[in-house]
Image 1 (cartoon, rainbow, N blue to C red):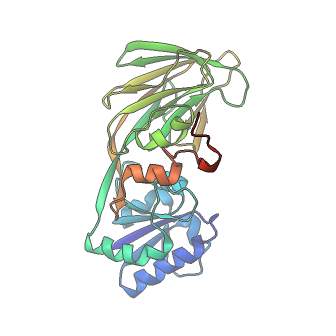
Image 2: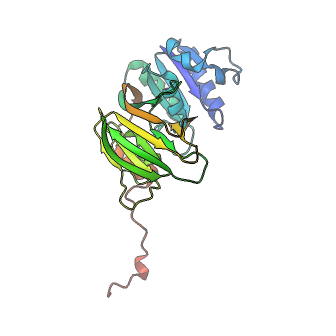
Image 3: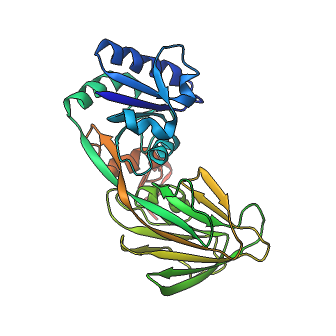
Length: 295
């Protein structure tokens, strides 16, 4: 089997974990290719290539780091939906739940085909009347905001050419179900199970008490029209790719034609992950010794 490796070397255990995978692949006669950005940091004599070409020499991608590394791996693959095995070297690990101590067992299961694939919906972004984006796909979210100026922008939202509403706000988050537990959640958006098909639109600090998040069917084609009086507007994809665009521009967001394929080895309940990772539904601690039950 051919394995490709992305890794975030800002994580303290990254080099040791990559070396562990290299040794395992050599011992078991599997091919391995490193993303060029990390190959120069390793002393091993291993084949490497540019990150956006890693799909050509891989059957499975191993992504080591945190959730941000998964997002970067998905972006580098583009439309080439290879299975991704996420290894958590960070703290939260909502997308990357496999820990390094279980990595060798996980690799053996991958070789045997003993795993399941979670297909995650993705979004495609187009900036109308401007040059095409180099990385237009998002696994988590697409954010349109005011940039680094402390003034609101004016946003009009359309779905399938029908006018929906307008916002005076700091910005707008267009999210997938996977991204519903990320930035969208922080601004009051709903939580969706991550294998659902839907698009969430959540305003950022709207100048209205009646502005609420909306959920659209997955085949909706959304258009966001911007008017920024201070001349700043920013488009950010998955929190990693930021692009300034015309302060009176339009952006189209729709479901991508491909999915991100995340390898799942354990039958972890989505709701169990919410409780453990985000403390969802956790009740406040009560000191019953101090409670007056006569009240």
